[in-house]
Figure 1 (cartoon, helix red, strand yellow):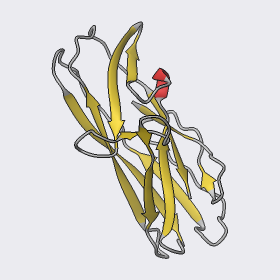
Figure 2 (cartoon, rainbow, N blue to C red):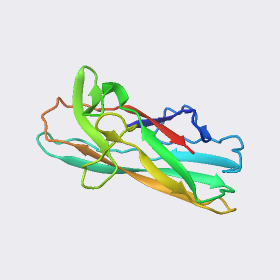
Figure 3 (cartoon, helix red, strand yellow):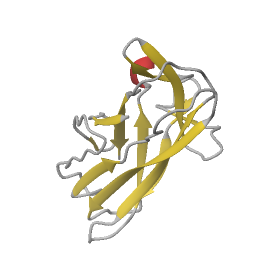
Length: 164
């Protein structure tokens, strides 16, 4: 799975950029009394080689590091639906074959992480206050339900948007 980062306009400062790798980072321009500069990185939610008719779980991490946060400062992290265009069941692909999966806010896999529309929820958190680049992290919980896909390397690209 790879991540993309992008801008999102909002009442507060939002920032990002595109990165087509499992890890990506960006710097924001100065935010009005919220943060001087932020960077975001994400580790891939890698399920490894999937064994048919089993359930596979994995985690990834989104890390936000901001200089001079005044606050704590509220932030929202949203995830796109990926290639499936729906949060009900995301899909990874390998050639013409697909593998269903989803991303969650919780380890129990009950809160679908998306943009807050439909069945999905956004992650609302507070950026850590401090002058020496404190970090705030969020864990992404991934789950592949039992299915019988064709063998292959399955991938999807998710856009991560951080608004603050």
